[in-house]
Every structure is written in C-alpha cells, then in structure tokens.
Length: 283
Image (cartoon, rainbow, N blue to C red):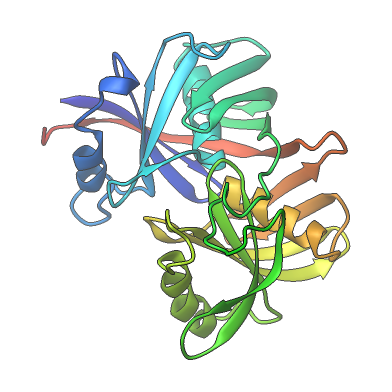
C-alpha cells in the first residue's frame, strides 16, 4: 500500500507521497501512469515523490512524474502542492520552506493559510534564454528566442521560448478557442525543434498587466493551469513588449501573480489546496 495526498493548485492536480529516497524511486514512472489515470486510478496531472533529506540548503527533496510516466524537471504548481502537503502534514512549520527539485532548489514564503488552502510566494529563479540551454534546436544558436518562426508543415507560427528549469514555447493569439489549441498543442509539444519536447502556452494579452493563457503540458496534454507555464508566459509577454513586469495570469483554474523582478528572478504567487488523503491498494 502507498499512502498519498491529493492536492490541486489552480486546478493543476498532483498526488504527493513520501519515500525514503527520491533518487531510488525506480517504481515512480509506472506508479505515476497507474495512479494518475482519470478512469482507473486516483486521477491527477502528475505524481510527486518527496523525501526528508537535506540537499542544496533545503530540508526536502522532490521528483515529479507526469501522467504518462515521464519525469519533469520542475513544476511550479507541483512544488507549491508539495509545500502545502508538508505544512498540512505537520512536517514543516517555519515561515519559509526550501524544496530541492531536478531544476535546483526552490524557496517559498507562506503568505496565508485558510484550513487546507495555502498561499505561497515562490522564487522560481531566473529564466534561461539561450536556445541551446532551453533547449531549442536552432542553427546558429540564439541568445534569445523571441518571435521566431516555427514550421509546422501546413503552416508557420511565431513563438517565443524560455526555460524555467523546463522548456516552454509561448505563442500569442487573439482567440484561444479549442480548434487552434487542440490542433497545435500536440504538434508543437513533439516538434523536432524541441529535443526534450516542450510545454506550450497559448497567450491572449488582455492589458498591460494581465494575460489569459491556455496550457498544453508536456507529457500530460491540456491542464487547467501551470506554474512554470504561467511564469514563462508572463516572461514571453514582457519580452514581446505586451505587458509590464508584474503580470496577472488568468487560467481556467484561477489567477496567478507573476513578478519578473529587476534582479532577474521570477516570483510566483498563488495557492495550493489539500483535497484528500488516501491509500493506493494496487501495488
């Protein structure tokens, strides 16, 4: 049996479970595929394994596995869910928390608690802009991937790409309807220009301080929200001179606040909610 807790962050849902050592969680990809199944499992966008080991100046380490079993470097919403789980379970009580991820340590401040709901501000670090670091296969490599053409065979779209510890491809539209979203999402996620596949953000600028975004997540598909995706979308909007450096990101699951600070770091502020605790019986 596996004890787990289900949490959601703006509708982006995760199953969190404690393990002895995240580095030795060899069964996690298979477990993620089974547990995250909407029809045959608990249902979630991803499974996150956590251990209580000091690493990179943090007190906890984590690894996240998408619903298809692939491992993601980082999830902004997922890391916030881990933090909420640790506070809710009594494993942590300080005003700040540090969680190690495959994309490096992430540190957050507890802003507010209301029962099972926790609001955090997390320092998501500085974006990576170089095409070979994101990665995006461009020859020659570019220092910034802004408003570049992407040939999809039947059409060409223009995209901006950054890494928030994981790869992102952002596109701007005035209409975020299903026809464009479901047609382009899988094509771009698996496009050969992205060697590690990519997360895709479909962005509609609303004002100088607000954007609306739909997310096609690598290894998951459509999600109601994305933490790193919200950060990447906001950074893309700023790079393309569509917003200021403080952006409200409207998603289907709710609004997140992104501040790209002058020191280069991206601050993400939003909530995470504990939904239920359970036992997985099908090991």
